Amino acid sequence: MHGDLKDLIYLSQKEMFQILTSSETGLSSTEAKKRIEEFGYNELSKIQKHSIIIESLARSVNPLFAVLIISAIISGVMGNAISASIIILMVILSVAIDYIQSHRSFVEVEKLKASVAAKVTTLRDNKWEDILAREIVPGDIIYLSAGDLIPADSILITAKDLHVQQAALTGESLPIEKEVNTNEKKIESVFESMKVVFSGSSVVSGIATAVVVSTGLHTELGKIAKSLSLRPPKTEIDRDANIKFKNIYETFSAQGYRVLAVAYREVTSQVAYRAQDELSLTLLGFLVFCDPPLVDAAEVINLLKEMKVNVKILTGDNELVTQTICRQVGSNLKKTVPIGLQTGIPIGQPYSSFNVAAD
Image (cartoon, rainbow, N blue to C red; front, side):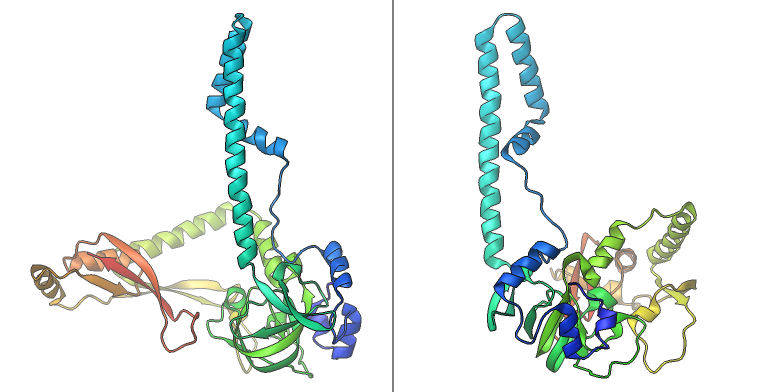
């Protein structure tokens, strides 16, 4: 069964296994198949496959085919059965060829996806084996090591020097240390737990074993995906406010100013603060900074042009600021390309994002 992470983290491992109907030896292949039937595959979305008839009809919805079919009907009504038959045959052959080619491409793509599909080292039938991540079910015991993508929300059983990247869920840019804490303190959010690893995050370093609690749309990532799809439409006031803020930001940026939004929220005093403490903030206003280019920047760039040197500008500014600064230094900006810079932190963790402005 899918357990409640927030309740399970306070239980002993024995109690947790009882609720998940699992054990330290994992699940059997037979039990895993039953749970796939009960909970579905471990995926956030499903690709609908249609029958040959449905696909063929879908491909027939084409203005050219409609014209040809009408022509065939008119030819038939006027007694020209041969012309009508030829036109109908052309339509049928065209649809058939299109379907065959597209279906072959689809099959090859599916084969390719299967060959590179993510796999997880899982304890099945009391032995470790690599299985597809989509076939993970609640109660499975999984093994995690550096570089692994975490396939489902899980609670750690063992861990050694484990650090995970969960920026996609919490916004924290640096890896988070995880450990098996038998005395988990009371927490407000499950993301604060030291013993829980989440679907959508990855292992930066260390090794661990964990028991799967939630899969697919039942994971925290899945809940976020569902909430986004069900988000109510913004009110007119929200839209007007967003437009106003965007206009302020873009107006100052287009003048070459750097803009920072300042927001606040009342929180209780605590030892450490996390990314989730920065949610539901109230916008206070904007800070605007002026940082003009050096006086001789334009002269230097012109000299480089005379020497046939192509100028590329590396900047952390947004595109509007970049365009303005380039104009100020006499650089004819043609395009900007966003890039990431890795500096002094683990691979895969972007330190910052930059624009390359090409002259």
